[in-house]
Amino acid sequence: MTAGGGIVHSERTPDEERAAGQNMHGIQTWVALLVAEEECAPSFEHHPAATLPQLERNGVNLRVIAGSAFGETAPTTTFSPTLYVAAQFSADSAVTLDTEHEERGVYLLEGDLSIDGDVLPAGQMAVLKPGFSADLRSTEGAITMLLGRAPLDGPRFI
Figure 1 (cartoon, rainbow, N blue to C red):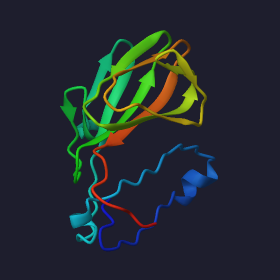
Figure 2 (cartoon, helix red, strand yellow):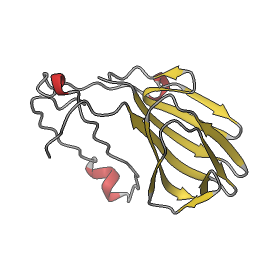
Figure 3 (cartoon, one colour):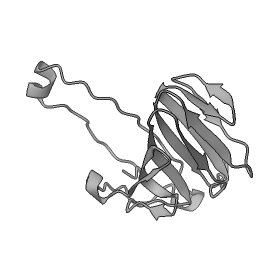
């Protein structure tokens, strides 16, 4: 979804799924638009999971949701170079996050993860140093989000 000049939406779970006690986990991420695009027309796109690039590296399942990573590009519209990848680590797995995106972070949802040997607690995000690749490792398995983008092109107001 691109909010641009303004958008209204509602996210709802059908009554029968709520009554059955369905559990769903989600992360909602907002990415600042370029200054020139801040007031663009609002829009919404839907891309089924099957259309999103998925690959496996060293026991890590990677799904590119938006932008580009690991040589793959998602079909979602972005307004600047973007990194947004769901990464599921199996036990004793590792992947290197390169320097393709200047600003990068790793959010650990659950499991264990170390970044260049430093342990990242679940529910926290690590901001990575620009210009350096990062070695991500899990011994027991983990669910993470890899995220980032080009630096902002001007001040933002919240």
